[in-house]
Image 1: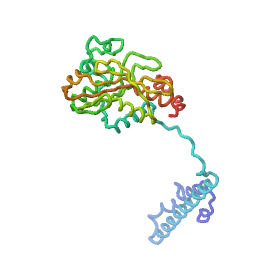
Image 2 (image 1 turned 90 degrees about the horizontal axis):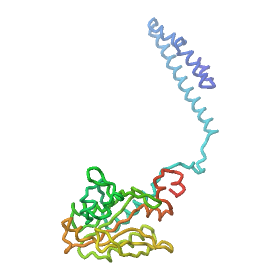
Image 3 (image 1 turned 180 degrees about the horizontal axis):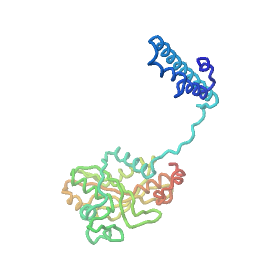
Image 4 (image 1 turned 120 degrees about the vertical axis):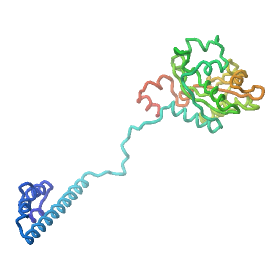
Amino acid sequence: MKDKIKNAKSLEELQALYTETFGKNGTMTAKLKTMATLSNEERAVVNAENTELRGLFKDKQTELENAALNAKLATEYVDVTLDCEPKNRGTLHPVTQTLKDLSAVLESMGFELWTGPEIEDDWHNFTALNTPEYHPARDMQDTFFLENGNVMRTQTSSIQIRAMEKVGVPIKMFAIGSTYRKEMDATHLPSFHQIEGLYVDKDVTMSDLIATLRTLLSKFFERDIEIRIRPSYFPFTEPSVEFDMKWGDKWLEMGGAGMVHPNVLRNCNVNPDEYQGFAFGFGWDRMAMLKYGLDDIRKFYDGDVRWLKNTGF
């Protein structure tokens, strides 16, 4: 049996020999069953033979397994100089990437991030922002009203009110989040993302606002951006402006801004004779469209991975 073990050519042949030796009816199994009738000297001989055979089987198995592995490696190898196969890896959505970029710019300018609830009460969404009951922004055509009188927030300006109520002034913060209005076309969605900034302190001026907007846009788009402001009206700022930026040979409307209305400051227990500030807001979906050359805002939410890949994401 020893010679048969040493001369086995395959693991299958070795397994057959093992069964023949140590199987239920194996030769060594039979010897071990007679141990109770043997003398001490005879038992020692059988034990030695058992140990030797098991060692031979184990060594031969290792030898055959290594030989099989080496044969496989000789024909199946990996060329480490080849490029790896492309993997389908997930990436940040362009809207998410835009948010991260904008947040990083604003934080570098000293603004602190705040968030707030998407379901708002009348006070924080309208009244505290100097929006009277007759203002068209409260119209059912624009706002999603809930049965209990609350609304799906129409603007992240409500977070500015909450921030001033909580920490007072001076304050330099920005708010981000989803907002909701009843509109949908190629450039508008019923749910869209908005980012707003607020800076209230002593001696804050319109010049500070313009410089902040120009710096924000220039850092985000990584180029010098020319802006212009136009007179406008918002109930929560006075004076109010809309700001545009030069994109190629065109002026693009970006958002609204202005000096915080004294009534808004009073609603937050801030003395407007001592403190003043500015606020601005815009949708960052549009910023993503401009930066990444996209033409239809609705494509952001189609869930078409092929489209995202074609945009470079």
